[in-house]
Length: 206
Image (cartoon, rainbow, N blue to C red):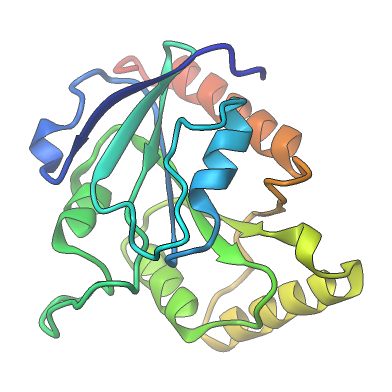
């Protein structure tokens, strides 16, 4: 799939105000400074669609971008940068929990993880929440250009081991990417295109 058009539609913190269109949505989320904006810009062939910043927590709203006029890319705030109520089961803002648990248009979330670091507890906890809530997701390892292939394989293996230790039956589908070198771009877009085709074929809502 080639992205021909990418248009910003709306930013908000209220799921009820998200677009009413029944188009498939793909949400991108990860820890602060994971390279989410850079990845989104790389995928959409635009330098400034998503705002990049060296300051963690720059994205603090639900941002909808209409792609090719038939699906939405959703840029979500990074988890781990803001204080969260101890009563909240999730480790991120309440409106993000609402988005994941109530947004019917969501067909897949991409959980971004910085491949440079070994398995982080906060990422494992977040993915456990997604699994327990039966929210479909894939892992997107970012910044692959920053370390060697040997270290990439080692860190991916460490995540597999840690997830199996946390009662996962199998590793979720994952991608290894670099926004700088466009690594993984084609694989990600092919995956989205294949899911879109299934969604449009099997669901009359879309």
